[in-house]
Length: 283
Image (cartoon, rainbow, N blue to C red; front, side):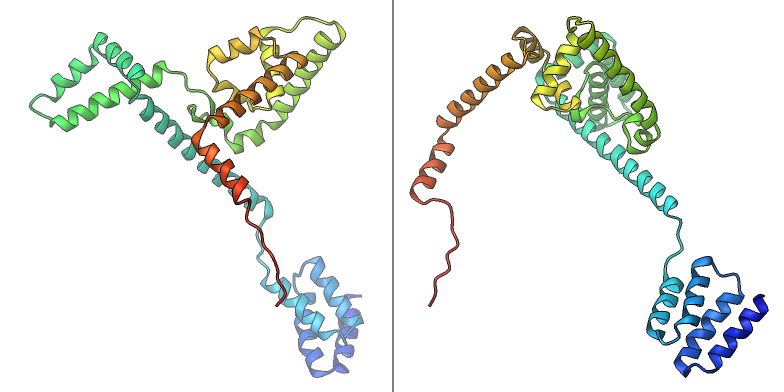
């Protein structure tokens, strides 16, 4: 059957025009060789419609020149590259936060006191005596202070210490686990608070407050503890209380802006000059 089909193809190509014969021979080679199914379909279509020679050329060279790369491999490499970029970016932010805290007197003094109690600074000086320069000793002491700050200070929010599980690659791998955990959490929430009518605990109250404020978990975690205590004292998980608090914050912001010299100058300029406008005047 294949032989008959190939013979019919050669007969039809014999009566085709020269430019049709060229592309036809190309597709015939692909047809007789180990070509894929789509190429065979293009070949059969060419035999049925030899007059569409420009279209045949296009389909042939499109398949010939198209990159044959597995899409799954491209996605995997892209996800890995993004994850590596995330890790180094987050680590850089964490280092900046530690370097900043090392310059804050409150944390620096506490770190130096801990280092003195543990004898770390004295050991650094004894090791560096007659062997290291003053700058090297100073750098070593600075590293000791930063390491103590890393171990004692819990940095939260966008500058926290990067975790492997937070990377995109691991988030994708753990997505089924997170989905199951969320379903279990949501079912417990509905059962305990919507059905049984239990009172909210502190964790649930803070969750409702965070949702009302439309803040991400990292943003909310970066707030000071005394701020969260204020939220709890004012019972901001209750919608009515939060609306009052929100209105107060807006009024306070307006008051600060009203007393701000720069804001006053801007309002004066807007009142006198107004925003820029584009006008079209016919000559």
